[in-house]
Length: 133
Ligand SMILES: [Zn+2]
Image (tube, rainbow, N blue to C red):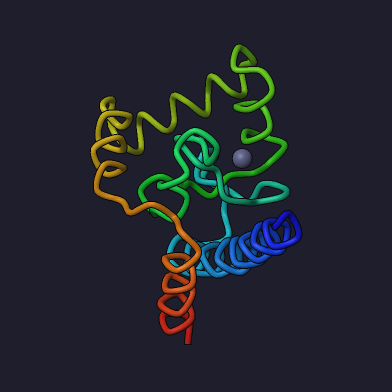
């Protein structure tokens, strides 16, 4: 039983990895390979989840919840030290980009998102792959 659990979580991790990569491709295609916080090329661009993946797993693949952001210029600080001026600036930019009530809007979207079961994630992967071809 324990073995099965480990297998399951590994499979989940693998699906997440593929989905994350396809999501990143799709977002950079749509928005450009830039940091949306600074509107320029910053080092280590990645996906910054506005409402965190851990607290809001159902918003992991919600485009409205993701900004492309440089790791060292903004993203890292929003996790590490929210009182750091780089984090404060990132939160200001999120408000500018999404509106003051972005949190409420995302929470409403979250209520309509399905639970991320393996079956759901596999379906999402098929859809993402179709989209990327
Ligand atoms: Zn940046």
